[in-house]
Structures are given as C-alpha cells and as structure tokens.
Image (tube, rainbow, N blue to C red; front, side, top):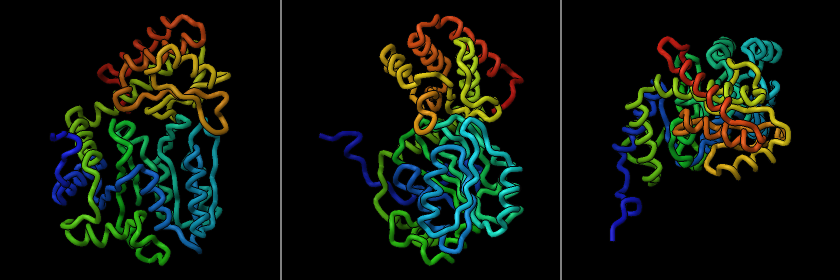
Length: 366
C-alpha cells in the first residue's frame, strides 16, 4: 500500500537546484545559496568553523543566548574573540560596533543575530553592515528568526554569510536550513586549512562538488519531506507576497504589545523599534508559573517562559508564521489574562485596535 509521505521518489538535482533559486529570490541575493539538511545550527557552525581559525580575531555581538554559542565555537576554532555584549532588553547600535572595530583593528570576522526570538529584540543590520564593510571584516548573520518577518537584504547590507531557517516566519519545518555565501567568504574558506572538509559541516564540499560542478550531482540524498515543505513555504510566501507577510508580522507584534499594555504588562524590550516582529517578550513576575497557568487554560497558545538569565521574569509570546494572526494573538492574551485572574476583554479589544491600525493603508512598513 502506497503512502504519500513514505513512498516519495528521490529528489532530483534539478529539483533541488530550483528550490535553491527560490531561496535566492526570497533573499534578493546573487550570492551562492547552499541548502543544508538540518536545523540552522548546522550551517551556523559550518560558517564559523570555515571562516575562523588560529590567528583570526572575531567580534562576537551578543544580544541573546545564541551569541554565547557563537563565541564558544569561535574560541574552539582558535580565534581571539572580542565579545560585544549588550543588555538583552535592547539592541546593539552601529556606533557600538564601530567603536569595537576601531578598538580592535585586527578583527576580521563579525557574528551577529538579526532577530533574537528568545529575547524579543532585533538589531539594525543595515547600519551595522556599513561599518563592518568599511572595516573589511567578514560578516556572518543569523537571520533564522527574521527572514519573512522583517526586511532582509544580505547583498545590499554587506552580509557575507546569511543563515536562515524555515521554522519561524516562513512557517515551515525545522529540519532544513539555508545560507547565502559571498565570493569573499568562499575565498576565506579556501584559505583556511582548518575549514571542515569531507564533513557534514563542510560548505566547501558543496562549493566544489555541487556548485562548481554545475549543480549536476548532489552530495547526498536530500530529505524529500523537508525539501518539499521548504518549496511549499516559498510558494506560499510568493502567493501572499513578502511585503504582506512582513506587514502581518508587524501587526501581530503591535497587537501583542497593545494587548499586554491593557493587562498592565510591560514589554521586556522597551523600545518598539528594537522589538522583533516574530515574538514579543513581556516582563511578568514568576513567569514560569504564569505560563503554566496560561497553558492549562489553553494548551494551544504559543507562550513560553524565558530561558537563561531572564527566565524568572520573562514570558515570550510567539507570533510567527501561521501564528502571526489576530486570533492567535488574542488567544494568547486571553490565556495570559486567565492566568493573572484579569478580565481579558480590554486586552482583546486593544489588540484588535492595534492590528487594525497597523494593517490600515498608509501604516508604516515592517
């Protein structure tokens, strides 16, 4: 007996390459795109281990927990690491990056997370890219949480390595990820004797055996389900339109902040301009207990207690992909109100008003 999910034919090289082109179109990039068969930590680690080595000096910008992970990988590669850490309830500025580069002129690699879903902040990559490009360093960006939710233009912003995943704003699976790679990055990898080769972490293997070979022969059998799901994500985004998708995420963020304010809850990230459109973080005492009560009231809502240092005081309201919708936001707010023994009506109304204002013709773009 055949099964549509179990009896899939192998994905051809031609089909794989067409999905790559769809990713490049999504990023408006002319750089090479590599699709990796795994969660986005795979290409992120591959980029760092290919681009950093003993003798390198890396600026690792820490605005959330992933910055700590990147720093550990960079040190493991033998690089000298300069950590630029800012409070998790704000964003780094281009001036802070420029000052760090001026203080450490040997920096040749910069790592940054665009939007931190875990902490709810987002960073001004366009401005940061300008100062990194002027300095001449290689620029790696983790854009897993930002792609599809806010503008992302790696070529225009001088991003040499832009890593994305399908599982957040794109509304797809976690088992496939992608990275755009500039010519400068390929050259850096090729000059690095410690860059992974004949390894699942190797991007150079994809360059030499797939891209330089004319995309005729795949390195391994791709995961059909994840690749087809990625293709479906790209088709769905094309049908909705990327500007409309970003506007929907911006409206969800505005609605969540407004509804939380109606409940007397302060945002964790104070400035709206520094708040990520994929998730809104809130300051709530005994956050884990409140989330447990909210999920008991409605197990379907996308709420989570913060992790790491802010765990005791942060609640994260995820509103990405299909959850970037007014009804999903209102359901989360209602569950929170129930957990706090508050009337949900003002929060629901506040969210609706903010959603309408954000979605109105002439409203500011995401």
